[in-house]
Image (cartoon, rainbow, N blue to C red; front, side, top):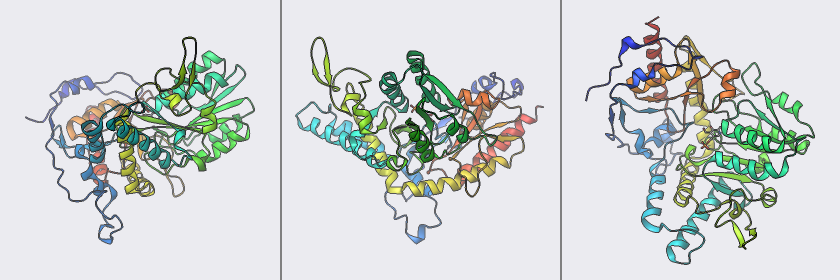
Length: 470
Ligand SMILES: Cc1ncc(COP(=O)(O)O)c(C=O)c1O
């Protein structure tokens, strides 16, 4: 099959403030997809000794790539370069195998069977909970509630803790850079309780204004909802300080750790987090599973979120009594295989080492940032990285007078480079930056400088191409 050639005469030049785009034109071609696998490479994060001096010049990206079969394919006639990791990460073979082992070997429902398969499934499911607990250094595994994703975990806190603790005079402080999943549930709960939502804006450096957040805290503040690493700005917030300030006025803190837990060491005890959420699919685990960490004294005092099997102690016709956490918050059959897959992902990440992942990603993030800054007309959002300030491993950007979706489509179809475009579920943030959309390239530890080079070259070609129509 021949490579797809876009129909050039239909192109229009768009600016990022417009919601229109020419991508439909680009998309109308035939997509070339080849799954020809080239996953030959000899080394794997699970088999090599990373401290071997002979491997010192080999990056974590090069070492781990063979573990990700999906990366070894051509898309639209080019080698796939996957830079959409903030949306979802890829899964190593060990995670795929854990899922397969479960479904082939011991698929069964958990907690309520006495037969061999059910006992094994229950053991593995609860082992996965212990792995999550230890990964974020929770003091007990019952502080981990498995949910469908981070969004469901935030809704759990909103509907359970929020509805029973917030009153009309209370305030919840958030930043305008929160993901929609951390804003909308609190809007719904504020409508029901009469509590007020207060939002922290950005500083001139395009970081949520933490000084303002501190000023806004008062005895009225009952909760602070804040991300750790922004999925658009790449800013990393001083989460320990925020928690300390909030606790000083008696407020609780819910941390959205979706973009930090997969990339760095996160320790809920040293942060003193009250609640923390993350999604498995962003940390090399399966979709359909995420988790809520909650301090046990908070969880024990919270009413159920969903009712049904598993979450009860006794059921009568006129009322029910409820199980202790975590069961109280896991109504119905959970995502068993997915939880076990998440456990395998955690084993895999730990085998590489979270600090090593973080150090490598800082280097790669700087490389990406500098690469983007080298292209005239590209505007990168968020703080400037420095010796003391590290960005998360992603860059959201726009190119003057080119719609980000056109950029993303062109990169995909002409170069096999996968990035994201749109509002990244952060519309209030985009509005505050005076745009409706941006393009975003996001990295994970299995990316390499070569991936970044290919992307930067492809982006440069794309910008030149669109500019040639001006
Ligand atoms: C910062 C942040 N919070 C929350 C979410 C929601 O995650 P999920 O869709 O897995 O629930 C995302 C996903 O993009 C995110 O980046």
